[in-house]
Image 1 (cartoon, rainbow, N blue to C red):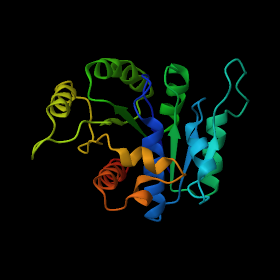
Image 2: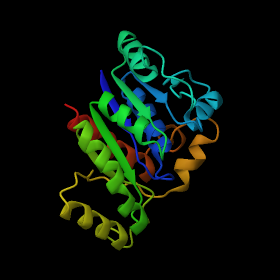
Image 3: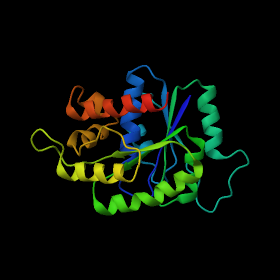
Amino acid sequence: MKKVAILAQKGGAGKTTIAIHLSVLAMQRDIASCVIDCDPQQSALGWYEEREDSDPPVVDGHQPSGRRPDKTGTLARLLRVAEMDEYDLTIIDTAPHAAEAIGEAARAADFCIVPCRPAILDLKAISKTIEILSVSDTPFAVLLNSCPPKRGVGENSMVKESRDLLLGQDIPLFKTAVTQRAAFSHALIDGRAVTEFAPGSPAADEIGGVLDELLELTK
């Protein structure tokens, strides 16, 4: 079973959106997938409650602050259950501003996706996430997310500048950039993902590109 954590210290990076769209597309490709929602906002669980299909399942992995960790560890236990249930891919959706929880997810994962908007404050904030990842020693790649659309043939200048900045620091980066598109949000309203709501759309193609790269990176 591949264990993939989606994490970022800064809020608003789009972790839950990426987790949902990737897990549904994986399911559509006959890759048995599930999501562990460790975010106290529980947005992934809220999406699942609106969904007609029971797959891919979303389970509650959040542990309220102030509660002592259970002896087995909530996340570790849920990952063992997912493996016993023979899932091929488990995606861990993490909370922002929670270094300890992010570190736990990074250590438990085989690979980490770090979504980041192509904006200066987001790019600066990413260093805190990378510091946590460096301790876990888990391979990762940054995914440029909520990007401005292309103008003409080439990549948007903000996206290109962000890509050059990250690569200049030897930070691993997905080749695919996810554009800010209405289809991503509209799909989630009634418990669907973009590959169900608008199959064959540019948004669906981008999620397909991310999944293709993820599967290659986690071979």
